[in-house]
Amino acid sequence: MTEEFGLIEPDAVEGFGDEWEEIDVSDSEADTIARKRDREFSEFRKRLKDADQFKVEQSVFDDATFAAIYKLVQDGHIEAFGGPISTGKEANVYEALGADGTDVAVKIYRINASNFRHMTDYLAGDPRFDGIGGDKGKTVLAWTRKEYANLERARKAGVRVPNPIAVERNVLVMELVGLVEDRARRLAEVHVENPETAFEVVREYMRRLHSAGLVHGDLSEYNLIVHEGELVVIDLGQAVTVHHPNADEFLRRDCRNVAGFFSRQGVDVDGDTLYDYVTEVDPTP
Ligand SMILES: Nc1ncnc2c1ncn2[C@@H]1O[C@H](COP(=O)(O)OP(=O)(O)O)[C@@H](O)[C@H]1O
Ligand SMILES: [Mg+2]
Image (cartoon, rainbow, N blue to C red; front, side, top):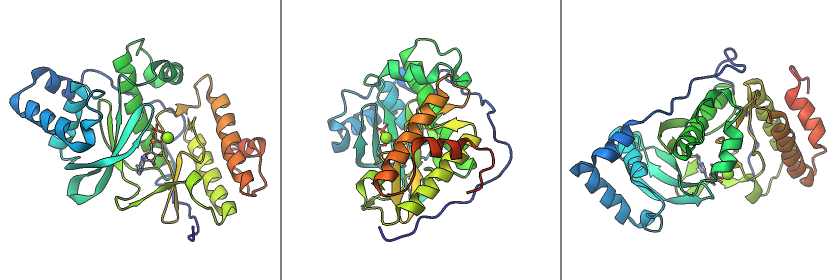
């Protein structure tokens, strides 16, 4: 790594806190499309199922997922699919061509593969998701919407995250960080030349996220990506509001993970010091 890391400027400084936005998980247009199964959708589904990059996955994507992709294509958010960037436990991430020739990342949560119990733990206690109950499909939908809402909230608070573009059922479209030919690396994969500066940026993003009322909940060198001197926080699906009963425990764990990584890089920090910084109202560094 040769570049210095820089902080981004917050978009606005007011209007955050712990306000609870409404998150709608009612039947979406994609469900209607999947039910109707008209000719156009059936042909689209067949084409996608036959595409090389989906061949291995066809058993895990259900019709409603194909319908969600179809809707995103119709709405102009996706023009063409590239290959998979990542196939994780719960979601696959693909690179794709978005509106106006921009590159986008498409994160598709697999309803069947999703670890439903683990998701419920993060949703229960988040006031934005009262009333989801034990419905697995709804839980995954809520999860995807939550990731979108969290990205939006983080972005507004001045945390560098992928710009969220669209969400449909279990499919999230966001800015692709890095280029198709030049994949962005996770912090864990790069040699950090100036860990002190990188740490200061991450610490500040954690503080901004916290003052916007959110705790990431899975922050480590694996969910921080690096591209062209920028550090980008990703994977905000599990992020909870500070009201969540386990928010403090999640934050302490995030602080331990991040401090652990940077102290292995030679930075003089531990989890408690980082926690104090992140939760201090107006820190003077
Ligand atoms: N917006 C994005 N731009 C570029 N790469 C991304 C983007 N989102 C995810 N990725 C890549 O996909 C991987 C998995 O994404 P992530 O959101 O962390 O999902 P998971 O829940 O599977 O960990 C990341 O480690 C990163 O390499
Ligand atoms: Mg991840």
